[in-house]
Amino acid sequence: MACTTILVGKNASYDGSTMIARNDDSGSGHFTPKKMVVVSPEEQPKKYKSVLSHVEIELPDNPMRYTAMPNAVKGEGIWAASGVNEAHVAMTATETITSNPRVLGADPLVVYQPAEEGKEEIAGGIGEEDIVYIVLPYIRSAREGVQRLGSLLEKYGTYEMNGIAFQDVNEIWWLETIGGHHWIARKVPDDVYVVMPNQLGIDKFDLEDALSEQKDYMCSKDMREFIEKYHLDLSLDGVLNPRDAFGSHDDADHVYNTPRAWFMERYLNPHTKVWDGETADYTPCSDDLPWCMVPEKKVTVEDVKYVLSSHYQGTPYDPYASYGDKSLRGAYRSIGINRNDFLSVIQMRPDLEQNYNTIEWVAFASNAFNVLVPFYADVEEVPEYLSNTTGQVSTDNFYWTSRMIAAMADASYRKSVFHIERYQEYVMSKGHEVINRYDALLEKETDKSKQMELKKKANQEIADMLKKKALDTLDKVLFELSDQMKNAYSRSDA
Image (cartoon, rainbow, N blue to C red; front, side):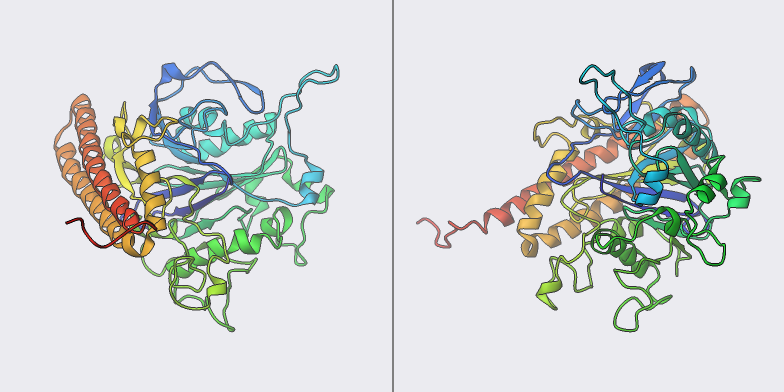
């Protein structure tokens, strides 16, 4: 899957929160309808079987409740994608990443082999379809998430290269798979943000720490031997750079991946480096863009939404631009594209009681035209407007309404963009307002069951507001697009 991730350490965020965020994008040629749900412990099986790879995994007996963003249409598995469990640990999986033939030849991916020509079926490894479902209900810290997933990868392997974020109120960890069974993970420093397009990203790794104290790094137990046996370390000074050792530097990266990292860092650190022109420190084609940077100012939820909605605004590469060299428009793959299925931003606020400190911000469809909406994550159910997505187009749910708004606004961009701007500002402002109001009520209430009712009420109030504003915006962009029909005529009937 094509996705984009940004992670924000607690000292780099505006309110001390840890934040993890990811666009989940469909592959080319289709959209995948998504919904937001709560999965209760009784819905977790004791044995899991992957739809795609047919791998079977015994699961622990003590699952926790968690939110998820699964596919709305059955057929290819659960694809739980992103969520928060009742221990207030979050994860998002996955960011599809790249590798190179040396790694894939040394530790081949574990690919499903169907039964044929008298041979028995051979199950594949785990993948994006499975990871949240088999990990999130069983972990009580971000570090535990890395450890559980790492052990599963070593035992069952994977059929694809993936990057996975784990989060609690204190830490964020980022794990990257290396070939079929190997992996590395790094704790995100508290004062930085991390940007991840679809390529292996970690550019610094302390193998000594990973194989001993594991203070800031973790990896497969045999990583040192694996690197040495297959001559994967390409450094001249003996300082391991995982991106060089395990990643890719293909021409396709310079169109599809590195430009996205360039834009995000250019936006959050506009003066730290030179990003444009002949003397630029970094360009959209730079293979050495930093995995993490200390931002020039503290990062907000609105900043995260902006960069994950990017279509290269303010650059010659904006496909909607009315200025500059036309040949450069759309030269690079945007972050906010037509195939965005959802965006999840998980914000864990350290200054509030755990029962209500975690907010899951959600958006559906193309990020250039959608809205990001906050909901309390520690809940027993999700408002119907987010959970009732079907395979059929409908204005009764947030997913399809967002998809229609995006398609119509794109086709009538000049006329509709101001409707989108007003829609986005209104919904995010009202979202903040409602959360602030209910935070104050929750602070005064000590009864846990009454707190749960307050969170449910807040989420429903936000969903009701959202539905009303989304339908109003759909009405406006439908008019703008209809007014541009080729059979339009200005003279009214008389």
